Length: 241
Length: 251
Image (tube, rainbow over all chains, first blue to last red; front, side, top):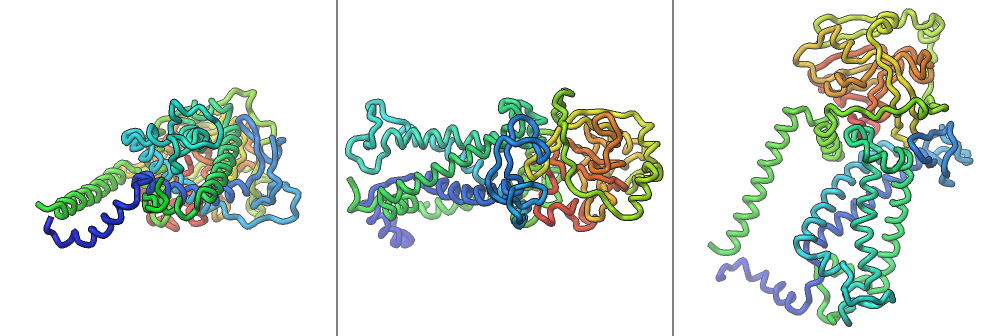
């Protein structure tokens, strides 16, 4: 190893021995890509919903039929009676392109995360609750390690990864007339295309609630060190257990 | 071999393989007609992935059809009908003088009257019309399959897309041959057992039930068969991509 190119790397590897590894590179990269996609999907999703802030159940629904519920917001289309005297600027166009593009990136990133997470034992090591962990109180798993997740956190992460994300993708696909033509069960299991749209909305709301709680918990646990760990993958030496 | 050069070799090799793989994939995708006309620009990747994957998945699939009991009592006719003098005159005459011109890469360019179109074998289907805004309705649509009309005029082998125009100037669109020749792609003149109402596109409306409502243009007046969309108006196959709506709307 007399190669001179190794000299600058020496410094980082010295630092590495003083910090402990926290998140695997793949977890970090997929985390931030997903975060970006989520932001894009949220903004574009809000813009899309503004063009018709009414929800229905079953196969069909439009401004001439009763709704299940209406969002108390103005609309970007003058065909929707909202109770507001003005119509918002229509941003549906680029929002749709962005929504579908971000969805593709999020789905591919999610697949990479889940497959590599299974292969690398990420779910088993970090997210599946420990057998000995029977307490539902805000207590950390694996003894005194403050960087480990408690059982409620573990179950929440698993619920988001394996229930909410698949459901929001599925209900999104269920709104596609082409996908429904190839695999009708995509939409019939929800009782119709409008039911799928309504469920898509509620799952998105749950994901936003998760995001808010996630950010609050990161803040409470130490915003700088936790964010740093998700970027660099390491826990600072002084914060090691 | 040092670690560094091995690492360089591996990453370089992977990058080269990736680039070559992408180039091959692009070539294959183009050959099998999996690249949409709006593949350029920052959202082109998403639009292309959607079109390619859905085209592979749905080439022959049939849009869901529904029982009569699910027909919507209140189908919403979005948008305003044309209010120019010409349209008014045609409407007053029961659209007897309405013509549909079919031209382009066809053996026998023809102009059809409404009566002629109605004399051809008809198909009725109860399908869902979903608007990109999020609302929808189910109706029974009656018309002549587009494939039948294309067969009458004799499409040439190099035909790849069918472009169709409304009398409303900015409303035009196009589909690939998989959708153009699809059993359920109709030129409709009837809805729910009666003549198509003007609000829903009378006298003629294209129905592409495997795509969102904006592909089903109203007041159809002209059809052109082409081998490429590059030189048709904006080159994007439709006005929609200009204002942000993807050309392929199977979503």
